[in-house]
Amino acid sequence: MWKSLVGCGEKPTSYNRLGSAVLISAFCLLFYGGCGRDGKETLILANEGGVVGLDPHRQDEAVTVTVLANIYQGLVAFDPNLKLVPGLATGYSNPDDLTWRFQLRSGVRFHDGRPMTAEDAAYSLKRAWQDTGSVFRGMLSGIKRVSVVDPGSVEIATSRPQPTMVNILTQVAVIPMGSQPDSMPVGTGPYRFVRLLPNRGVLLERFDGYWGDAPGFRLAEFRNIHREEERASALVRGEIDFDASVSEGQRRYLEAAKGIDLLVWPCASVGVLGFNLSVRFPKNPVADHRVRRAISLAVDRERLSLEAYHGYTQPAWQTVPPAVVGYDPDLPKLARDPARARALLRQAGFADSLRLVLEMSSAAWPVGASLVPQLAEVGIALRVDTVSWEDLYRDIYSGKSNFYLMGFGFGFGDAGEMLNELHSQATGGMGCNNVSGYSNPALDLLLAEADREFDPARRQALLKRAVGIAMEDLPYVPLYVREYCYGVRQGLAWAPRSDGLVLAAEFRRKK
Image (cartoon, rainbow, N blue to C red; front, top):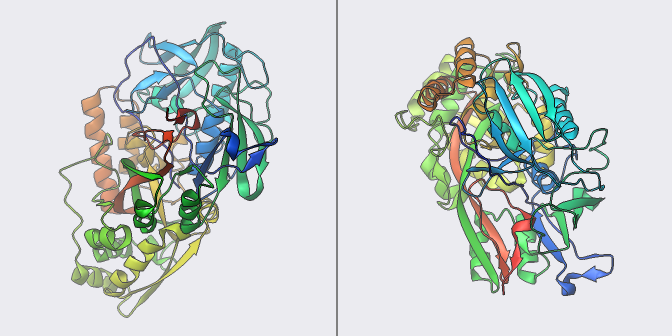
């Protein structure tokens, strides 16, 4: 459940120059329309999963967001250094704390040839805000009205100050009025949708009517290669151009290979143990706070980093990484304490043994291999079930998975992105993605206050307090802060972004 991307948490200032951002990381093709690899027309990008849907307002699964972000664009975007830059709006202003007015870029066309209008932009914002299936519904719950001001601008009125509004809109795609995105995506990005491929891959083609710089490759295919060793071997054999998810186990193999560059980049993503708390204790042991605390106390995070990731991760001492607004450097480190963990399990009624099943993506199996003996030392018999990423995602969101490993990516660079998902579902829209069933009124109040606070220092203080509550209650147990590692075929020019996004349009042939 990597929730996408990264941003900033301060009150944005008005600007007149903006750009666009897209998130890409999947896999690509061998031929299309008689033009194969020899013609250098196709960029092949690989990842461990495929798309789970095509509607940009209803998806937040990482690979899916990656592919769709190459097709669609928002009004605003982040540059590679996480600064707000122009997308489909050339600027915005705040007449007051409850109003956001966007000046639209002229000359933008959708992939079907229609010009983008203010009505399209307003329709898209309303759909992301109001559609019952929208993953943005909770984040945009403060909107009161969306309106067309004139042919070149739209306006958002909110019922309360919402300082992260412009950050959120970096991910809200503009689509044509009346389009059916789940069957035929139509966007404004540098590539247009061609068709779905086997195993949930996607084929895209360069859009010649794109308003920005033309991509260097005519075709981009996003292909799902689930097994890490198969991706690495395909890269070495020259069958793909890019591996967006090089595992720690494959780094040495690729380092020794000829013709491959490995690029490592810091990641604003935290690996956590998640729980379904909706089924109450005692039928559900992890619903007991003492059991979750015992699990946390059983884990040696530095040992886990070495065993599972060969030291390529950093221990996570809280549920947000250091680069994110709301991180609290004063929180104590999560020290391992097996004796206290065993005592808590005895208090919870598990004096002899507790059996748990941990579900995770098969790509993360080294984490499970490290956790099993660590938890066994405190009396927890852990069975690890590995599944595909797509199946894990579905199990988490359907409530089927009771105990799982996932990653949180901070697309807005703000702790509220994750914390808002812990907001009580019964207390407004912020908790609409609360799959854990967790609830704490004190956290709800802090999040509501932070959500309307424009002052950066006060917002930071509120989010720090909220992170403290989350670390006390442990609806998630943090394990590690990851790095991105990419494998790139030599001859291609490309640089990682701080948000972890991979844009097909940013690849160029080296001269």
